[in-house]
Image 1 (cartoon, one colour):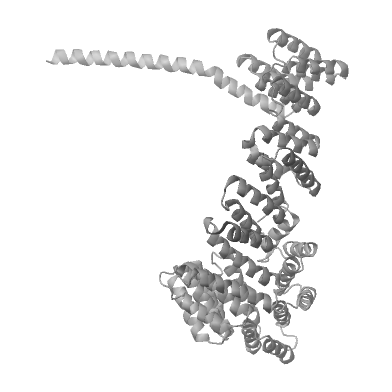
Image 2: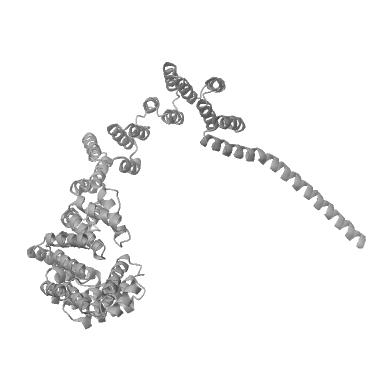
Length: 623
């Protein structure tokens, strides 16, 4: 037994040794096989480094070697020639080209390189002859045509590249096959009309390129003249080929880019009918116009769906709802409404609710009507009744209900029913403790304490809310915390601050006359107080709320000039900029003020937003 076991063990050992030797031989051959690749990779990296450093002769030696080692790879040959030309070794370049043409006479790109060689030696006629020879010898092969045009383009010979594509299109009997490439070449030449013509040609036979063309146009069409040219060409094509709906779609896109939503709607209606889209395109356009605050265009689009497409459209109810919102926002954001106009919108809301019913489904519409009643029609009792009804709807969404409670709390506060307000804010805070709704409720409760003169507790709450994930809440909390700290720490008494907080509450309650009396009393009782700039700011806010824009701007400007280092200076600049942008539509002045904020007040909480708005007004496409 022992002898048999030893023989078996010995046999296993021998087999193991043989396997080990075979594995080592295999690894050796593998390493030998990989060595050329590793060496080639190292040479390629070193050649690239020499090339980038301008050591062209050293790079040329390596690129020639790599060309041979890599089955005559065109890239390495082109780099070799480029390095030789840079070193002005023209005779060697010519010898290399002659050899390559002899070995591969169908490589027409070599004639382009040959032409470049002559051009480097100022032999223009010979260069032209080689370039023409390349085009003449070009085969009817799309890949070869594209490569040849690319060779010309790399030498910035755009006219020859254009000639190549045009000749290639004729050879392939497809005049649009290279249109996209031609558009790019005309772009490089700065020929906008020809660029546009070829982009449109490219979708004549290939409509599936439409989105790609839109991307290129968005990047390359930048001036009003460019858009005017594109519109003219599109109108011409639509007249000649009325069935080519992709031109109509592109024309609608052009109108959207230029914010001409009225004409965009005309095209959208035509496409909606032709493609049986049942309002989808029109609803999307209405939403775009709404987001861009062109409420007239949004209303026209939404109303078309309601009146012309009716219940058959899946967008009918949403369109009715969004049309209401557009009408309301047009008035309240435009600051140019009259009571009769507000009554028209009020009736539209009530008609909608009469048709659709008052339930959890229409709760948000009820909330909007309540806002209209409270803030613009001054009917707090009706607003409160609407919200009390809304938050009691069975099955109402919890977040919609919570938002309703916050608004209801505000309305009670406007009626000076402070206990009801804090009760509602506290309910939302409890139900959405870690949510932004909870943060908002906590902020309103803290502000309520500030109104009541409990400044230390209010400041403690504001300090906590400075870390809120809502930038708006965080910024407001920071402003109020700093404001309390600055004005409470300097005085032995908080009387002036109490008067100011009370004026703040009166302003919130739309009791503007009483607010002005309180603010005036601060200036008379505490001359040269640190609150002087804050008083000016509060008065400006009241004037803005009353739509006395000239008075508001004058007060904001006074703050900036007299108190440039105080905490209200950046606030005043931002408020002024918003008035010029949104109400006076003076874009230049708004940009000037936004720029001043992010340049002179870079640490301001308004700095980032001011830069964003400045860029948007400048046309940078920032949302």
